[in-house]
Length: 84
Image (cartoon, rainbow, N blue to C red; front, side):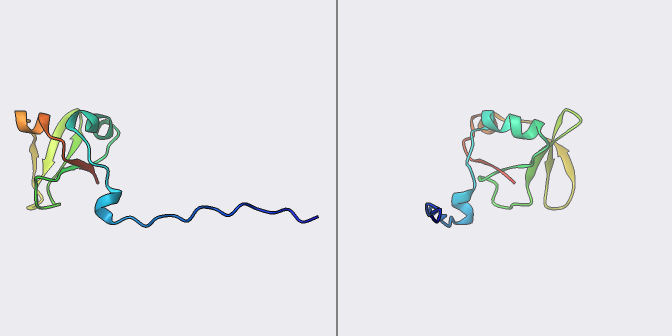
């Protein structure tokens, strides 16, 4: 007797934007602490991103320079963050 397999459901292809999970700032902290880079969709250029460096939030700008990220109220209340 032959064993039969159930067919696997087909995977749905998602666009790059749909595949990105959009987060509130409060939800990004875990990712930053884990060494991930975070981008705010409000920032048009993907060269802008934030990461944690020795317990300090650093902002990478498109010119390659790093700056300490001083959070504004808008940053803290933001709901448009993605993990890079």
